[in-house]
Length: 138
View 1 (cartoon, rainbow, N blue to C red):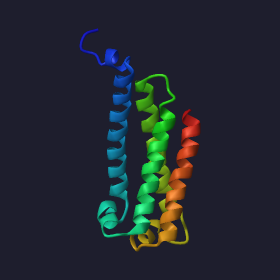
View 2: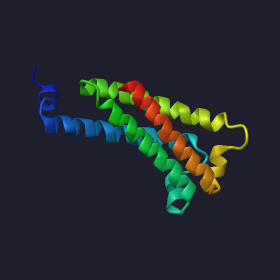
View 3: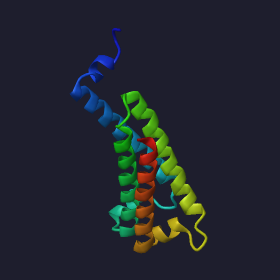
């Protein structure tokens, strides 16, 4: 068929460009979603030197990229797109659950105030959950 992208995806460099493009787009979209639900502005806080926010955001980035890595095991880029979106959405839901089901304190408030211990736990949760999601995807 003329005008389709499939012949380009049959070439290794084309496939790599396809995976990379989808990955960058998903990172932008899901980091923006995380930014909308947190009580702080991630990049502003990181620029101000808030290590707790940096750890939590780094965990989200690592978690998303880890899910993307597992999703590449799928047979086509189309399956990769579906499974990476599903995995990223589940990671997003896991973060929401972590925030709202923690009874002792408010995760976002503690991270915004620079509590590095809470930022580290948030990072560990994002990374750990991404491995579970990835194992289910692969």
